Length: 195
Picture (spheres, rainbow, N blue to C red):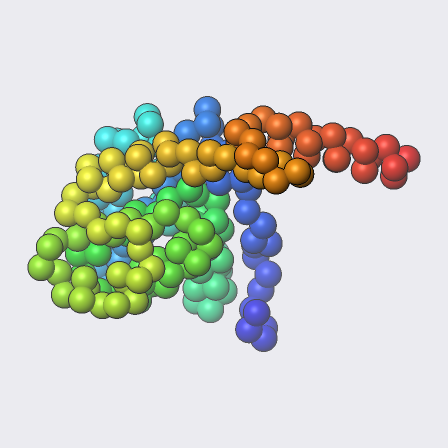
């Protein structure tokens, strides 16, 4: 942390899939600085109206009212911390790149390096698609929000682990509930040991 920076958020992510009713959560990244507020907000509002019943949608502007009282330096730091928190607490990030944006590029990299699904939405001739850093830190590039959402649906519906090795080296079908039970048992034992 830079010297003299306020500690406004302690970034410790929730479980990414802990959104209401087990919905997947999507963070909407895109240019804000240097564009008028309606350009930055309208597409996000439209996305929320279209997909808000299926997904929990987080947008950076939702945090803005809490930062109005801060001076410029504190506000910049709080905005960055808030966006990192939102990215960590989402399953996926959709980055709308209709123009260059340093902040959006940083959000893309942060989401990707944090293990989140990253989908870029832009036109096929966009010069940003020739940027190796954008391409290397995304899972998919789409020409529409509908394509991006379809990709996220498929990616998050898949079963990544099918089989694990048992203690004797034999293959055992993966059962996610078994690991949850084992973790709950371990936590219970730790609590009993502390008493």
